[in-house]
Image (cartoon, rainbow, N blue to C red):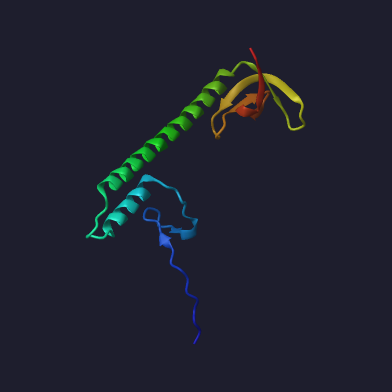
Length: 139
């Protein structure tokens, strides 16, 4: 009688119905994980020596600080992206230069700006160039 191999079960996503590989899960420390750890700690504590209230308050404070730092980081990223968009938009109609693939400096007027990618693209002489590749701007 043949015996089939036993494989570890994979979990299924609640919302999409797709299978999620447990090894592919990200290891991100977020507020939800922190709360799960705290609840597990409280659930499994010894009733004869409960958790110190100062330790619990300290952990809760750390959670609040972590969440605020995450919000601050996201805000900083959004501000930087907005700054790049403003800088790209301000280049329309100005003469700008960049180095092409051969290393030659190409100069032309910025005619268009695109925000499709992560880095804004400016059109110089009909060619799309990443904003961070622009080397000089003539006033």
